[in-house]
Image (cartoon, rainbow, N blue to C red; front, side, top):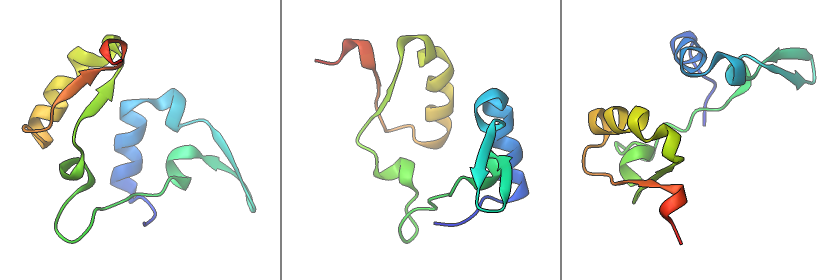
Length: 85
């Protein structure tokens, strides 16, 4: 696990500024959640997304998630959480 780079912080804020930009309490004060998140780079040369058996998202996010997943892990199935039993 590692702290996010400035580029990763910017990407998180671009994905969801309301969520990742919210205040997060720390021992030294308050920072944005994106600055305090920890990044899991994977194991060896394998990224976390390539270790996933599937990605589960809400129906409302399916159309947004598909192009992202196709770009980074085209063989990983995407599943709608509302269709799960």
